[in-house]
Image 1 (cartoon, helix red, strand yellow):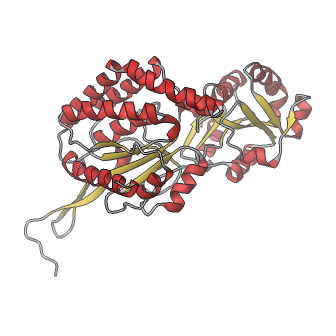
Image 2: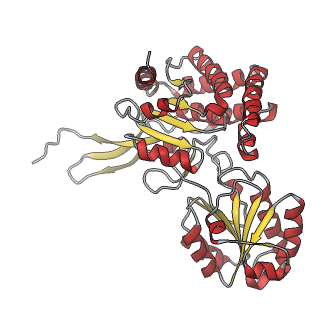
Image 3: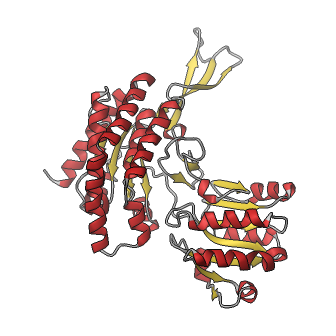
Length: 418
């Protein structure tokens, strides 16, 4: 069977399964999620063994530390995957919810009902936890899912997908509702992106080059974000101890992810007191700092930032720092160089905070909190299927509601149009 036939066969099976899945009760879907979570825990050693093959191969290929971190699974991360599935059980099922029901002058009752998107295609790199997160979110929201992970995680993804699919099927979920394209040939992705009659939406997760390739080649609508150039702005009215903790966490806690801070903006009124102790703490954690001219004067020996640094998504222990004269200058910098992902302000001034919220154009804006919270689980969505920075249909972390759309539902008692 050719690659084209393989992918088309899987997509057809997903379409058929999706029609049945959309009609299943919440109870059956929740039972399946619990069974899937238990299956991950019961097969933890099998998953870790498969993952070790992928990590060893990644190191041989000399992949970056950030990619290897995203790829690596251990007992704690697998428990986290299972926990994320169980969190979905407690969340309301959006399917069938009727919203905005209104009575028209002619007596018609017009509302909207949430319905699944249908078949969701996920194309992703490195992170095998996406396999579980996407499967769980799609199942609870009534969608079939076709997963296509990167070759660097093929053993991990295959093990996880087979375990989840078997557990879901045993719990009453239609076969084909959770599918993984195991062929690592790039041609499989290209074929997948042509199947608009079977797949309703594509969600890519990975580096900017992957996402742009998907957008350029897909005949199917794509929900995406290109990159995460996230900023923390420390205002002149900031609590500097709080600001230090937030900046450190935003950069260091997990630098290889899209919601990590890449550029720190500091008001000139506090920069002289704030930057030296922060830099000492950051450098002790291995962070390379690249600053503007004013930063270099405050902390001599700081590497000079270039124009490219302001656009950079490092995904590494590298930080760009700029001293600004006002919040307006900080916002101008964000508007020019930001990616619309996550922006944070540290301030004790309520008016300043409100202005920042109103003017910062991003999928999530934080006041006195780390950018690392722009995550479905942290924001109460359970697991997330990705973060969207576009402005149609979904923006920010995508949970259950974002995996549905609405259709109009109209109740009448014999009305006809004149």
